[in-house]
Length: 252
Image (cartoon, rainbow, N blue to C red; front, top):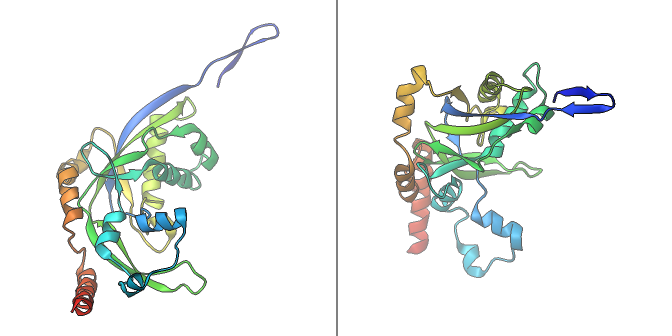
């Protein structure tokens, strides 16, 4: 913010200006959704409560429901799937730790993402993984999430000028795409390398064909994929087959 002496004893303060840019994210590695399920939200809101006799007989997991609940949705527009904008801003703030000339706190203050959720293209598949729970014993469990083998997104970013420039925003977001990523099991976490991305503007260059292809997988394709889950890999298909056998056994 510029401060000038207008006359003796008086300061003239120039208001900061706000720049804005829309950028495209091109997924370099697959993406995991990680939205909290409706069941988990209910438990947080009103408590778990004791299970009935019928509930105790139910299978521990319902992969189809967990798959459906794992995504973030947009009420309208070209895509059904979205991703929380604060997650993108958080990735940029984390990338600032490895980017000379900018600090994490300055990113948090000087960058704004007007949208609550950004648009995401790509067909979701049902994927099961053996994970370790967050308890003291790191108990193993099977977690089901929506998995996008290929994806693209678009993000609208506002920023304070002249402190930041379009070049600075592109560079910082690009760094976030390389060393942080977005979604579950992302690069930032260390063990996983998912959710990484490249950044492009209106001129997609070598990414144009990929963008054109993936953006065909919009709202209609995504809704059909959620309603009719396809398995992401052989391991998931094997686990689902075991589950179906148990369902049939209990129904007999």
